[in-house]
Image (cartoon, rainbow, N blue to C red):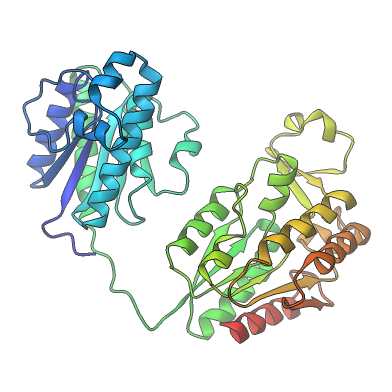
Length: 405
């Protein structure tokens, strides 16, 4: 990524936080950077730096006007509108390839608007938010983006010895990140996406080794909800030549209300983008919850296993596996390029092996039968007489993936 002649975007409320943003602007200039400023404040600003996209322009990007926002006198709605408007501004700047980093700061509203806007900025362009709520669970607003949160410690409400120090550090941090040169890409080396869980680690490690020996770059995504969603997002961006979806466990969390759902669009991107994929029902024997006392009451009589003090796994039953099989089939039937489903007959996770705490051949049979019953006849379904973590299964996965790429 060539960062010469590109800009740092500074985004925030220049009305109520004018003094703070003036100091941030001066700090960025002190790092020798060119700056584009985006104002999400809806009241009159009084700052000592040029505003490139003032609040009226940001509002217009959503099809409304600043006067209409002011007249409504609805703070929550104003935050939503200005966040969406700033996102559209940043999307335009990204399309023009004029930015190399984004920094914002604020309290609850300012953080929301900055994180909303940052969703439109590509992977690899650094994004930093100095926030009073950095310690909150902001995963919903960060999503799959590479956003760095930094605690402001004190409120963003006028300068003091602490805020001056942290604003200056934040400015230095975003500038340093923005000026990191990417290593030259090896255009000859294609990239494969693989999904992994602790219960499929041995399989994924072996597959990665085999694919690297064939000259592929391998990117492994932890199937923790965010991991699967990130993989889907990058598939949409055209990053991968193929997908080896070993661990589709997030579908079970989506179905049963577990903590690691990747949302309803999991297992759809490769089909939409025409990317060859091999799919395994890996870890669909389990739904993830937190500590044992967080398991919903309706599941407390089910087979539960403590994977860690803060992780409780619930074994999926026959009925849930029938539904999961249909979900997989319905998603993959829409694929526009080759897809192969591979089923491990001796267990779909480490703890689903014979003698394991989740070993349940009848539940797995319900899953496999459902996949067979609902899949398009053009999709090959291969059954391997092995556990998902057996070497023979990994060998078969890679062979089938290489066959369809």
